[in-house]
Amino acid sequence: MNKRISKLVVSAGATALLAACGGGGSGSGPDVPPPTPAPDLPPPSFVELEDQTLAMAAIYDLQSINDPLTLPVSGSTVYAGGMHLQTQNDSFSIAGQMQLNVDFSTDSLSGNVRNLVDSQETRYQGILTIGAGQIDRTTIPANNEPTFSAPLTGDVSSDVVAINVDGTMQGYFMGPDHEAAYGFVTGTISAPNDTAPLVGGFIGTR
Image 1 (tube, one colour):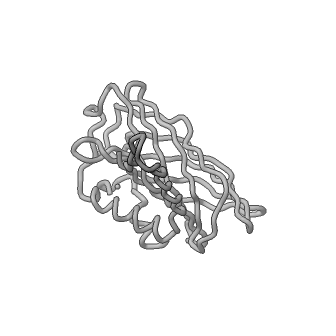
Image 2: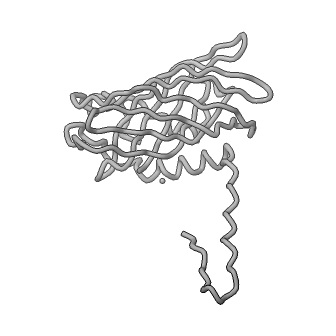
Image 3: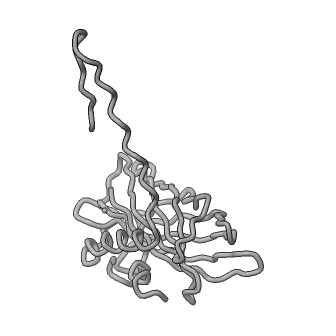
């Protein structure tokens, strides 16, 4: 397994492991043109996603997992970060930008992974969907029990290949104020005439 990506794969028994305003003119002054919109930035490369995600993970690597009983019982928040997925034999790796929407009032979560790119810097169209997930406040992280889980599924394709991901996310909330969601992914990844076990890791901060 790629050593850098493997740092994001949280094993079940491991300690857990980122206005411009235009001027106006008076009626007698010259017209002031509106500001030029900033150009859209290209999505990050595989290496950039890897570096950003590992840097984010390093901040929380030595912090304790939150006790589920201490999580908020109201309100919602969005965790933004990255996800890395790969076959167990490291023959294929892909990464993307993750958005995880958590509603603490209903103990539910959902989201997506977009701007997917593989380790050869090949871009993929489509998104992976984080389906209806659930927080379990009865779990005990010290006993290797994840705090939340959700399905991760989707079909994405490049000019070269189409792949299907069918997996499960499991994770924890971390930090003094539950400001990070951190965890791992297991499942399968399929291409035409081939299916392989899938492992991965993710982290997002609010």
